[in-house]
Length: 278
Image 1 (tube, rainbow, N blue to C red):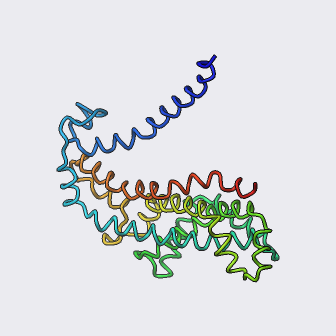
Image 2: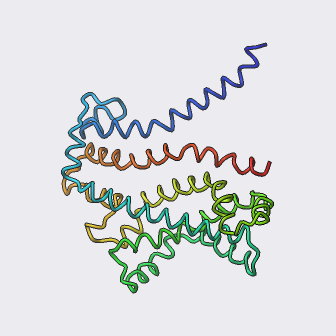
Image 3: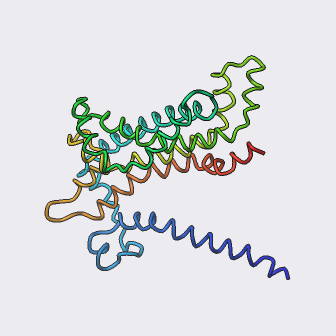
């Protein structure tokens, strides 16, 4: 009887371990990929552990590829975009979720519609606008559109969290003499910290990996982000695929570190809303 009772738990754990291995394998494969030569990658050993760990791939990639500049550009653009999205989305979501004013629902609907506009539809008007504003080949040509594109989803996430917070918490603070700004920073902001962490990860990842806009609006080599720089890593007649794997591994490290840093907050985001309501 005890074995039968434990069977569902064992099956669930087995499923979770299998899912974990399937999820982690691409990352492990990429690391193995970065330590092989072209022959191992495509012919003799495409999926296994490298027969010889070629750490020189990393040295070659670092020396041949302007990696530090591309990483710096991506870090700057992604960081500024994430900061902008979080600040504007939190303020907008607070205004439509906690305050009463005319046309509030219309503005909320208008913002949400932005989630359903394909990027390809606005590419040409956006390129013309950036050119008319003299922003082409500047960081602003990426940061401003990235913020605009990221605002609808971030606002929707924050709106859901803010609507789950009882209004009595702010009313009590106001009765004790707190202003609306103090109530926001002292009460509301700490509660939605898990949602902020989630948006930071998603927005940073999206900006870090974005290719189409960066390829269209940036042509200067000094301003290229990492995804654009990877295109130019390929040689004219042959490509060092092991070196490219090394570049991709290095490029993935900031996102892995970011996720590990905010992982606890993301886990809390799954439960904090129901906990506040309770």
